[in-house]
Structures are given as structure tokens and as C-alpha cells.
Amino acid sequence: MISQRGCILKSLANPMLNGILLGLEWRDYELLANDKLLPCCEGRGFTEDPQHATQIRCSLVKRVRATEAILYQYMKTWSHCRDLAPHSIHASHSARLLRQVAESLKGYRPQGSVVNGRQGKPSDFWAMALASTWRFGIHSHVVTLSKATPKTLLPSPDKENDTLAIFVEQVDKLWDDKQAAALEAIVNYAYNSNALLWIEFCKEQSHKVEADSFSLEANFKRRISNVKSRSPYEFLDQDCVSRLKSLCSFPKSFAEEGFVYD
Image (tube, rainbow, N blue to C red):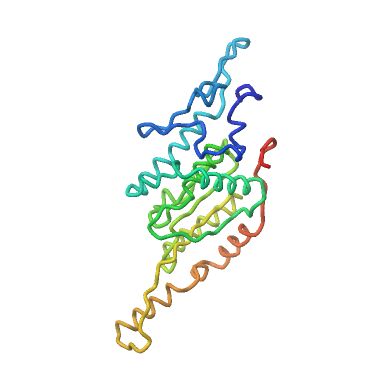
């Protein structure tokens, strides 16, 4: 690490410093380090050590590229929602999400969390993934379940980073066996790898069917409506549900020594 006392990356883990991409600039579809806000290495990720004729490097470049990859993934996944870009959210919203991530890392919140979301709308998970990667140096993986493929479903291993955060949005239509199996695979992976896990359930609105309507079409619609009104947990394997409940019940500290949160 560059100048153990002076490397700004150490300070980024303090959620009291607001800004999802604090110290970075999004310019012409490229994420750049602000050399004025990163004076320790002028945004290069290394400094010269003339005494030993070598370079001292930190994780800056790796963090920037990983954060940039999440932004690219967002633009590809939600190309029609670029005006809702996760790095440009309101300051108060940014501060709240930073606290959530920090509290989960510190063990003030359960290891897993389930929230309700809106179908067809990007979730806060993108901003949280950016914060996890850039501000806290965590290996983060975002899955939009309705658009996931076998190649994008599970995260790639990161041998240099033991802490993993998985964000799963747009979870719906779990009566579809493929959708249910995909979510089960993610939950089991998170449980076995001891990862942080956030899941967003988006329940499709069911249409009311008139009670006195007995046509074949009405009966069919009524059956569909009854399926849609069921709890998403009913479509999952009970071992998976048990693991998810376990993750969402107990906190665990992932914070390294020196982690600042007051």
C-alpha cells in the first residue's frame, strides 16, 4: 500500500465522507481518478520509492476498473434508464446507501437483506455495488435475474479479495422453474461462500377476476392470479429458504482492522 499513513484509499471506507464515487470522475464513458482528490499517488495507483529504486503500488487501478465495469454493466442492462444512473443519485440518498453498506460490513445489519422493488425499474443495488467496490474495496456482483444468463448468474472468483457482495434485482415469476432454480443457485452460492447478499423481489400485479364469472377464460385467469399472489418463498426449495432466512437473521462483521464507522 502506498505510504500506509497517506493512501487515500484507507479513508474511503469512512461512510461519513459522502459520494458514491468520491475521488472519481465519469467523463466520456470512462471512469477516471481525480488526481487532486488522490494526491498520495496523483491518481496513478503507484509512487516511486527512490530509496529502494522501486515502485510502491496500491489497489487503485483495480478498484477503478472494477467500478467502471459495474457502470458499463448498468448501461447495458438498463440502456433506456441512463437518466437514473446510479453514480448521480442525490447526496442524501447516497449517504443513506453508504451507511447501509458500512453497517452490513461492520456487523450492525444482517448478512443478507430482502427488499421490495418495482418491476422494470433499476434498483438501488447498482449504487450500493458501486459503493461496495470503490469505497470499501469489496468484490461486488450484480444480477438482474430476469436478464441473467448461465455465464452471468454467479460471480467470478477474486483470489485477492475474500469479501464478496451479491446484489440480485428484478426477482419475479418464480413459478417458472428456471427462474426459481437461478435464484436458488445464487442463494446457495452466497451461503456457501459466506457472502453479503441483497435480494429485490418485484411482484407482478395480478388482475382481479369477477367472482361471478365462470367462463373458461375467467377460470384460467383466476388460477393465474392465485399463483401470482403466492409468496415467492413457496416456489423455492425449503433448504434454500432456510439458508436465505439464516443469512437475513444474523449479522457478521466483514470489516478489516482500522475500518472507520461511528
